[in-house]
Image 1 (cartoon, one colour):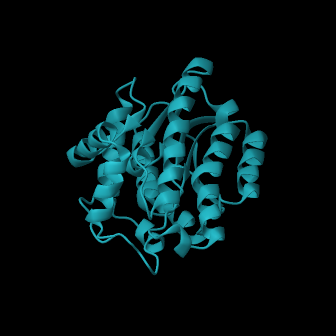
Image 2 (cartoon, rainbow, N blue to C red; image 1 turned 90 degrees about the horizontal axis):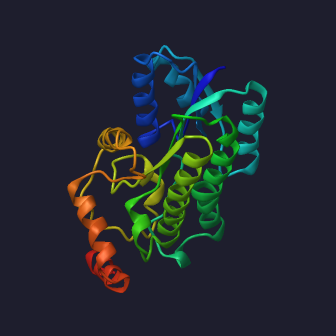
Length: 261
């Protein structure tokens, strides 16, 4: 049976770094992955990924916010009947502005990509997962609290975190696979190219990580079999603890003051 890895958002940022890390792991593995399926909108960038590995890279230039894109992956899986060793869902975007300052279509598209596509992909891949399969969902530290002026993005990532943790329990029980939710803080990627709207509200970044740091921490947490959430950095873990302890009214007030809103 063919063994594959699937990485969405593979053309840049955290998704691309996960692609590279999967390649390194698999090139050294005894039961190597036969193919890596990479998904993103930019076909040229996906094709360039083949230069980085000896493992065959199969590009799927798709916009996962569109329902027909997940259907195309479903057809490819049904045709090839592979074993999915890794599924990394790293596609997503956010906007740093008030709800009233953004277009309804943009906000709905964000939910489609950040939430609906993840449900669609994970459900589509479930028949092809098995013992030792690993699903990695990119959530965010924003998932841990309501954030005014990043409201839709934070809420969408809260969905991903809740969904992924529950999925982890179901996968362990049904097929022996595992789901790990990754919650990065600010990370230096092309995410900001789209997030910084004309009326952006974010003026202060408490800390900034790199995709390499996020991915390195994720693989460390993969070794901890009972862990279902990965959080990179002492500052991020400290904030994650505080937003659990403090009333969210106060957390939101602090955020507003921090960004001078």
